[in-house]
Length: 318
Image 1 (tube, helix red, strand yellow):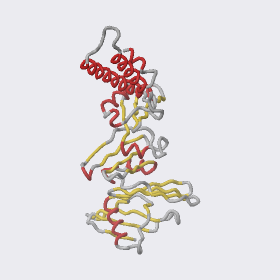
Image 2 (tube, one colour):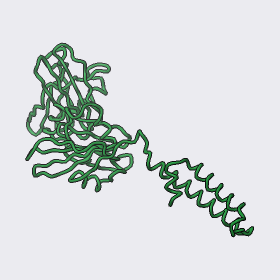
Image 3 (tube, one colour):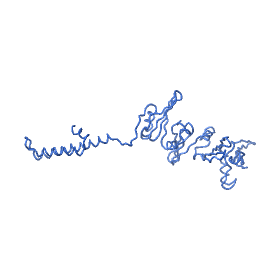
Image 4 (cartoon, one colour):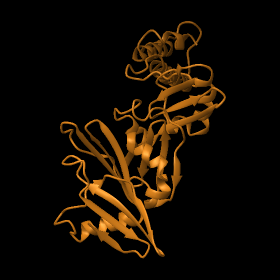
């Protein structure tokens, strides 16, 4: 024990040297009633060398424990509802170490808290809701791109997953939008006016999942345009002299819209434009038709093209 205590204050090499010197002195000493035999000398020397090696090992371990890396991030405690979620959803293997304490806001029915981790974030909603949601993986990486929290806000669901292998897909809902992650590593989102339209006009049941982020035009005087492609349609939002309009294309009109592009109905590499109205339903006899107006709001507020699809699968263009 004395050797171990000394080893905390002097170098390990010096500890070993001092022990060996002591052993050598004892072996050479023959004047005080202890003339060791040859075998006893060897055994004692081996025993002391082992003790010296052990002192060296313990000293090294204590040195490591007492001198943590200056670059190591502090780990904060995780408790309460966030702690329960953290432990039941992979803990450090998923989220890593907590890098902040809880950050709280509101009270009563508006109480909310969240905590940041090395590889994610966990939010707790109070006020009788008492639910926690975590963000991690590819969705977390996308969420951090500088658009949160003003666009997406706080999470309102966990990841909602479907498919497997190459068809695996996951998305997560937020206060102001949604983030989708695909098995090929592509991550996209829906937000703003397009997100509001998507939710109120059938969502994934009508349009499917987003296939890319918004494609936005540069603002030109009083005009601005954003379009987003989905599995089964397109949603476009545009501003024309202060008025913001949002319309979607889906169903039979979307089929006819694609056909117009593929067959150059409006000229080479041309499309009918972006939607500038909702669908108008017309029934004549036993045939029901849907018509929708398209155009280029940056050039004119008056639509220039009309695409019509009927219940017989026919397309008409004006």
